[in-house]
Image 1 (cartoon, rainbow, N blue to C red):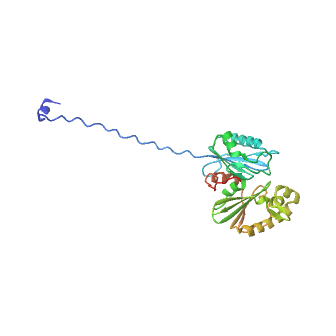
Image 2 (image 1 turned 135 degrees about the horizontal axis):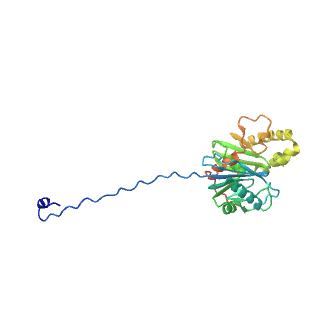
Length: 270
């Protein structure tokens, strides 16, 4: 300080120190969260299909398909899924629609594939090979997740190599195995409406039996809506009731997103 300033300061009074400089915190940079991509796989008796979806269910890669081999064992199916995954590129998780009974990621039946599936933990095996989180459900269940409205009683059936089925009550998923239920002349729905029956009976008779099946299912479940998917759905040649709708096979892939949002009651194998 200058001498004249010091003279004005009373004796015994401390000299005030300059105010400390306060550093303001640096504003946190806002990062845009990374969108989650899903490899959606649909395992069928004649073909295995896959595509990568964005978080809204839009396909961001082309749908790829590899023919299902004869005697499709776990080893063969996993190898094909790995090949489809390589073709698809990068993804964050995987959803698998599988033609059989699935409980907590474990396969208990695969009537239209091959040997070695009983009590096979497919979810665990694919997590190891794909190195991403994996969820697995019956293929009809996944297709249903992709097309139902979530209101009322909605039944979904798939007409392909076999006969798949699932029931939704206000959006809650209940897996069914109607394909092996007796339906016509002591034969099951799958006996009468699977691919073998289609080839043996011909399109005309197959359609007539399907019409009878729809009537039977309407009486059994009193559903609000019935959705029909699967590879043979486009061959339906008769007028369907107003509450019955043919859905696209791509729903079997798009349902892969909904599978991550779906919270079914935990199932325990008996």
